[in-house]
Length: 306
Image: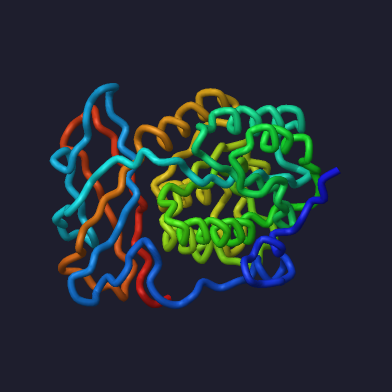
C-alpha cells in the first residue's frame, strides 16, 4: 500500500514539517506574473482564458486591456498548446456536504479528462494537506487516487492553497506556463494559519488559475470571523486568478469546460505596464470588443511590496 506523505516531503532541497510548509512566506522579489514591472521598460505576463465559437480565432484586436484603469498596449498574444500542470485539490474533511462515493466519482471524472502531455498532482486536505499522488502523467496512478481519500477533521483550505501554490511554483522553473488548481470544496476554511488575502496573493504572484468545483455550503451562509463566507471565498479565488466556479452536481460538464480551457482556450498575453505604480495592488480589466468572445484574466496584480 502506498504511504501517504505530507506536503513537507515535496519541498525541493528542504526537509520541513507540513506545518512549516503551510505557514511558509513567499520569497521577496518579482514573480512570473510581473517580472521587473516598474524598473525600466520590462514586461508582464498574463494568462488569458478566451472562450469563442468553434473555429473563431481570437487575436489582440478582439479586446482591450486596462491596468489600474489605464489602457495598455499588448505586445504579444498567442494560444498555448503545450500540456498543463494541474493540482487536483480535494476537501477531505469529515463534514463536507458530499458522500464519499460521489466525491470519488467526481475526482475520477476530472482525472479522465487529462490529455497525454498533461500532468496532475492529487492532494487531499483537512487540517493538513497530503499528497495522494505526485505530479505525474501516469493515468493509472491518478485513477487510483480517489480510493485513497480518507474523510476526517476540518478543512484548512487557505493553508492548503499556500502549499500547492509552492508546488506549482517549482513547475514554473521548468518552463511550464500552464498551471492550474482544480479545487473541490464549498470554500469553507476552519483554522488556517494563512490569511485569505495571502493565499490569493500567492496564486496571483505565480500566475496560477484556480477552478472551483462548488459543493453545498456547510455553513448555510453563516458569518465567519476574519475571513470571507465560503461562497465569497470561491468567488474571490476564481475571479482573482481568472478561473471559474462550476457545479459539483454537474461534474461531467464541469470537467469538459475545464479541459477545453486548458487545451483550447489558454492564451499568453505580454505587455509593458505603462503609467502605473507597481508598489500598489492594481486592478486588471480585460474587455471583449465582441459579444461572442468571453475573456478572463486574473483580477489583480499584487503590489511589489506587501
